[in-house]
Length: 428
Image (tube, rainbow, N blue to C red; front, side, top):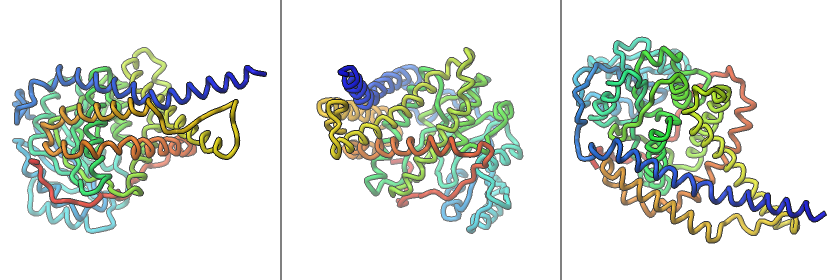
């Protein structure tokens, strides 16, 4: 009789340990990996305005899939025309917009000979828009950006240098947040450095990248053809095309100097919808390629595969711990199960200290690219509370939604929350 409560007590303790120590462990994995990346790849180029081997400048086609982007389309194209690059064309795809995006693009095309416009009669989804542009592009190398993004003028040179290697299929860039007027905006500024940038650096050193950034990625068209381009039924086409390439032994790289300035949601509703789509897309991709993980030839993918599965387990563990605590407040569960509080004690101090250490390291690594990052450091103390909760909840919701979703259903897009737009300063 005593064995049952003893087992449940041990199981509860293991669950609590996993919830509190998994992010602690991963933080140190990412920090060590990011430092490894810095000393191997980044240290020698930090102070240079242009890449030391930036003379590799093949012609490129810049692709911009757009849907309902009339407010910022001209600004995005105007910034592209300032690129410090010898030979490029711009292809804008109007994916069935219901606003004046098509008219704005046609007007810009009449003014600028480098710009070509492709109109799709109906909303086909970002994957189809990208593939359509890739098929009509004149050049072997493609740079794909979002319709509201502002590309740094030196980014193409930094990205193209990687394609000297014939094994490189894609290079992802370094997104920087433009809108920083609210708490959510300020936290996301730190997140893209402390979490996104740090993780990409680490993943680059210990195996494979989980995904290119859909807002900025350069591709070799031959590699895209080899893997069948983007998948129209995937909610996050950027994650899917990354996995397709890496499973087929193409190399995908991260280039922190290739910056792009983007708008992010600054309302909880917009943030929830964005992160839910990201979570659903990640689950969808992992389920799609689970069978490939059984092969020895996919062994370099095992790290990011295991990391994502553990993150799903962590999300569900958090929800279970909170549910047990709430249930214990209503119904006595002791001595079988005892969760005193979902808020950690001394372990929380360790996690909080580690979080600030991780953020501090990432800001040091990224300060060369964004000198205003130091202003967001202390705002990031809210990151675990806000974003860990959103991450856990979106993951828990995402899994059953993806399991119930038809595999053949096309992923079309809607206009996202662009936040509160602020005047840009690309040199700040």
